[in-house]
Figure 1 (spheres, rainbow, N blue to C red):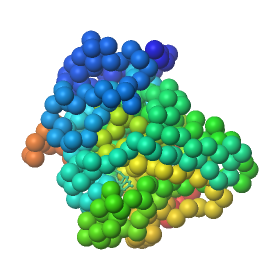
Figure 2: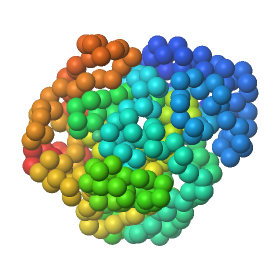
Figure 3: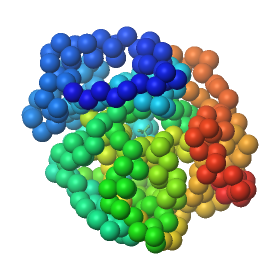
Figure 4: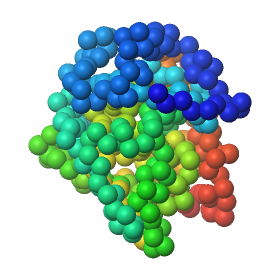
Amino acid sequence: MLIKTKRSSELSENDVTDEKVYKERRKLLKGLGFAGASSLLVGSGLSLNSFADEDNSSFKTTSLEFAKTNAKQVTDKLTPEAKVISHNNFYEFGAKKDQPIEYAKNFKVDPWQLKISGEVDKPFTLDYDQLYTLFDLEERIYRLRCVEAWSMVIPWLGFRLADLIKKAQPNSNAKYVKFKTLYDPDQMPGQSNRYLGGGIHYPYVEGLRLDEAMNDLSFLSVGLYGKTLPPQNGAPIRLVTPWKYGFKSIKSIVEIELVTRKPKTTWNKLAPNEYGFYANVNPEVDHPRWSQASERRITSGGLFARNRIETQMFNGYGDDVAHLYKDMNLKRNY
Ligand SMILES: Nc1nc2c(c(=O)[nH]1)N[C@H]1C(S)=C(S)[C@@H](COP(=O)(O)O)O[C@H]1N2
Ligand SMILES: [Mo]
């Protein structure tokens, strides 16, 4: 069983959520011997879908064991799981928010291969099971701020991107990290149907500067709300960079390559004046077509809930990341 020591400055899960359902489910899982029994249930054929309440996807998610605490928790109320898994941007499965849950429900994630290559001394490839077993999984509750000015608070499960990169031993030519989503038009209807796929040129690609990638906040997520990722959220593995607009958090990754030159990125190629390489959340730099000063927080409230909040610089993570950009003009490097 995996226990991580808790720093006194850290908040526990109790401090950050009153999501009773979430806790009840965890208790239930523990009671049934799921959490902590075998180190991992992935691939065992066991499914928790039978009591995964309102989930209407036929995709099976599985409980994962993880450490409960870490350094980066936020005090915001969690966005309910039902909303996290039904309001998505994943254009490979349709450009409308309610399409991915429908079009991704038969997405096959096992077998999977994630390749780490490029300017490294020890390239390697992970298979599906290794995504969950290579590193201890921990929970990170992060804000996710979409460039479209809505946001959520999501309890992710996963591990530091830095841990994966260190394992590959980058050489001195490695300056950037390039990410690629699966290209499989047979499974991803948006990749062959321009209308569904929003005019994006696939595969979806993203990139980070190496120091951004090595920052403690940069996270590879393999789960949310205690279970493996549903496909619409980027199964089996996706990036989460919480101080950047959501489009940097590339889903269903098959390749991570260490490179020397700044990689091209999907939204920047599509509309370079609207979406930059850095894409740091910044309330002072508006999108050409709308303000970034505030956002709509997606909560348990209904349509008329008062959920308009001010957007924070670096999405509130400035203490961790502002130093990465200290000599940069953030208006120019948007
Ligand atoms: N491959 C891929 N990754 C993607 C996207 C996408 O369309 N394709 N959408 C991005 C955008 S715009 C956002 S806001 C987040 C949404 O993540 P979520 O659906 O898990 O909330 O995923 C990002 N990752
Ligand atoms: Mo987004």
